[in-house]
Image (cartoon, rainbow, N blue to C red):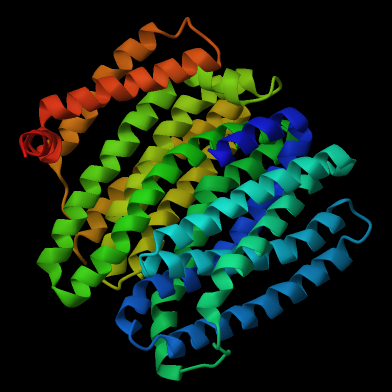
Length: 454
């Protein structure tokens, strides 16, 4: 909700050009993070459950990797800032370096809390970051720092939350390398770096291509629409994944494949149950969502972009949080590279072609097509390494319930404003919940009746 509020406020306080520069910096920092740092968090996710009794050696190796990468990226950042010393980008590059380090360390702190099944600590770290980043960002914008405001706010928010709630996990840990452990981590993590980089190409290259072809203002408009879809759907799906993935890994290591597959089946049903209606609802209510949450300069185009963005992100989340787990659980992460690489290539080619022909909508079409291809490839190739279950019956019921829910939402489109949007969301939730019970998705109705009778 704080992230939603941030989008609503930033698109009102910043012009499309300023928001576009802010979005491009965030995308650039994110790209460098996924290439160089994010594999450390995923390696921690995969291997810490095996080392829970004595995690110090693993944490020391992870910390040594982080320090080495921080030195390398810092040197490259200073070199780029010197090359562009007469450019307005120099200040943004210099700010991007500590922002990158803070983001990487922040993600490590979150990973530790999730792996250890500490939801309160996870919530405090993430929640404090979101609130402090937004508060400081708005204050700095009002002081005249423009796009630097939210960037500095994000940096301060991540640093404060990591120090206040995340630093205790690393108490007494010093950088040190265990060669056998490092080799295992690299075999697992390096293919993930390529995968994350290619996935980032699919999700963010369109912003750079839009800025190149159409300008920074249209890139800001597209980024705002994409951020709306991402902050809602990926948030919901990420919550399910964060809660379930550590349990799946523990089940696989301690109880075997059958136990892990049962947890994956439940994960898939819950993942669809929260994401499919949210995507359908956002697609139907796109005009009112844009009008309520975005500034005046962003609304018109975002209303057309949001339906395609929502459906594309739904496909991306289902692939990432369910089908891609086959590669990670099967320790064949190189397979993800081919899946996402094909999607990235298709995305770039279609963006270059369709942005010139269809403008911002061309980027949305290209993103949808790329994520659809990635989902098909992941489902087909991943099953060769680890057979993740597909709940066809319950999945069909969830899609049916979501489509039926969409009808009253579509009939209410003439009503606009915050109150109308709140009523539409609440009524949609009520209709959808009733349909889940009626269709008895994953025994939903049976469990309710047992509780009422018990």
